[in-house]
Amino acid sequence: MKKNELIFEGNEKQVFSTENPDRVIFRYKDISVAYNNIKRARFIGKGVLDNGISAILLDYLNRNGVKTHFIEKTGPDEQLCRKIEIIPLEVIVRNRIAGSLAARLGVPEGFRQSNTIVDLRYNNDELENPLINEHHAVALGLISYPELEHMFREARKANDLLRALFHRAGIELVDVKIEFGRASDNGELIISDEISPDTCRLWDEETGRRLDKDRFRLDLSDVVASYREVLERLENIKMES
Image (cartoon, rainbow, N blue to C red; front, side, top):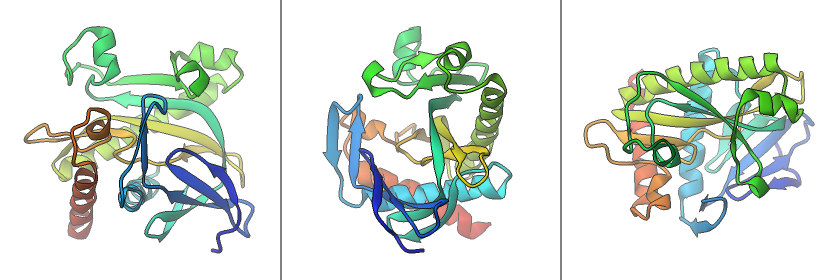
């Protein structure tokens, strides 16, 4: 499908229109940002890796009954997707407690809790993307209670599927951030945006080595090499299936 004009440019992706008003092309950039765009860097080849990883994961969810905006990979750093109206909320599913939440709760990094935590974040840069609850989201007119229930249910399903898939690759899914939107073709509420090491915490199961964006956040180096390792492990288990 032909890529037309640029309709949106974010920090790490571009979105282009196509001849089909209900289809867009996502292009992944070689940029990483963190801490609400305070930290920023370019890593050559990262966009290709993000696109490859996200294509595998979103396709896997589609094939297992969790609908996403992804249709197909169309180039090294591009993919064709259903056009959606973004809902400015992030559902974060946490299998372990890490990052800022560990500091906020006063527990060690990687604390293994007995339950699965599902958090809701308001995607608003001016407010520094605060954690909110479902009542806040409804009060702001962002979503309805039934839609939130659907989002939480789909996010949990996605987490369970991805956790099992990553385990086959020897990777632990510590947490995952999932965004949703309303599809322009039929209005259904589906997973949108990427799922990649930029939106997940991924730790090697044997060593605990971080394979995700924390390598950039925490100045651990080897960002591109770690992302490439994630892609190669996923491609290997895909070939074995």
